[in-house]
Length: 347
Image (cartoon, rainbow, N blue to C red):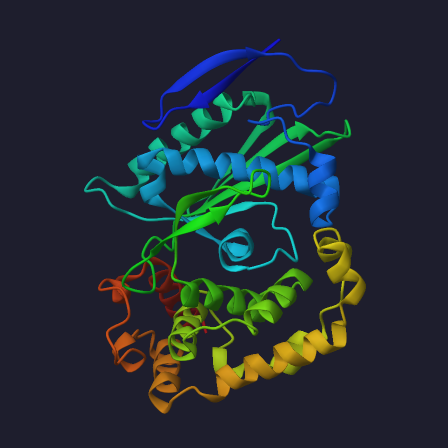
């Protein structure tokens, strides 16, 4: 017999006893038919289980006001389960950016977040030995290990970024997240889709994995405000350092990416069978080059002044008042400016 915790609306926990058989949905909130879900959606059962697990965690995060208000969902999980009409690839980790709402130092709030997340995971049946916590100044990572339905060891990650604690745009969204295991929805905080998608584009251009390529391919088919998307891409690029956005060799970046097991393992079977990697690359190159081609002279000047003089002038990029009021003091951009200044002094 195992104790399991169910969260109430105010974040309290009610425990009850449940029976379990070997390899039967251990640590899962519900009795999912994982084989049926895998067949229905066309994914590997291990990946479906992982998505059910991260969705269970996110559902409980959304039920706790303190966490819901301070953690903004980013990355492939937000893209897939909020903004995709049909699920073509799974995302199996939770990526958040912290939002600072308190008068006290954000470092103190960070301790509260860590404590509440660990308590949440314990309530779901995970033990302290299942959690590996890695913390650095800009990032907190919790790797959660478990025995999956096939009886093998597996894990998923929760990451919270603390350098991007100010959103790019004025307001964020509260969107419906679709739980793959229940097909029910719950509300989560997440950036406006242009900001979220711009982050994905820059992740492709500065990291360049097959998953990033597929995500941008899907984004290229979406309806978005391309001007806001472009401006968010500029800001996101400044948080990453060199090379400058408009100097990136998109052709070289995209052509260097090849289909690998990390993407194959999370793609829907039908999508994988029809996937034309060359067509995908061409679409992504055309889309990315189109965005770069629309950069205005003021936007290029803003990028140049940042890298040459370490002066961040968002007014050269935003003439519509779309950026957050504190964007000029964005910690991630300030950190890159300090790094560039230090490098210049060492030359």
